[in-house]
Amino acid sequence: MVTFRQATPNDIPTLIKFDREAQSKRYTAYLTVGEWLKEMSESTVYIFEDDSVPIGMFSVQEKTPDHIYFAGFVVGLQYRGRGYARQAMCYFLSMYSNARRIDLVTHPQNSNAIMLYLKSGFFIEAWKENFYGDGEPRIVMARVKI
Ligand SMILES: CC(C)(COP(=O)(O)OP(=O)(O)OC[C@H]1O[C@@H](n2cnc3c(N)ncnc32)[C@H](O)[C@@H]1OP(=O)(O)O)[C@@H](O)C(=O)NCCC(=O)NCCS
Image (cartoon, rainbow, N blue to C red; front, side):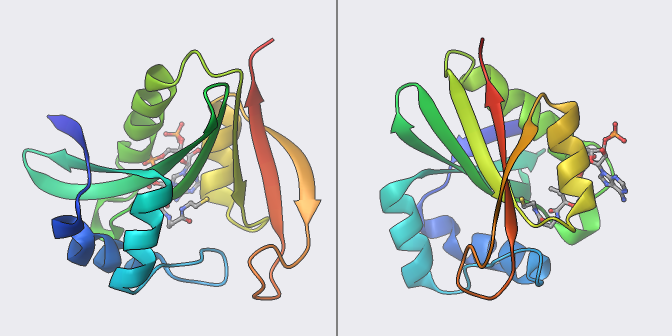
């Protein structure tokens, strides 16, 4: 059974392992304890587990009670393509169902992620050149309650 909990500093080695596996020009990874402590001070980092085995993670930043920013979404390499990301997205959206706006950024070539976000009610809103300063663009995707 998949369960979700807030990550703590004790989880940082696991979070770094997930990010190392995900790192590519399409995904900006946090590979140091310092980066994760900063992320934990600014966002709530969630880790999800299947029968206590860590499967993946995501971060949620409450910019205002009405505006949620979703980031750091990774499923461990060996667990991809099995529906875990879909389950995590459903859990996240039910947790923040009252938010009027949820947004995120992703790389325009990250087809797997973009498909999942589109199927989850997000639309493509904007293009940002060099978003993280690494020379790569990102697209902004948003899910807005009407
Ligand atoms: C994006 C990511 C989280 C998806 O995780 P996952 O567990 O493999 O995804 P799921 O198995 O739950 O699939 C959910 C949806 O994703 C898309 N998807 C996942 N794998 C796919 C693949 N190989 N090809 C095409 N679409 C795919 C599909 O739309 C799928 O929907 P479906 O079940 O209706 O077909 C995972 O690939 C990952 O961790 N990537 C590296 C980090 C990253 O890029 N994160 C996104 C940052 S914005």
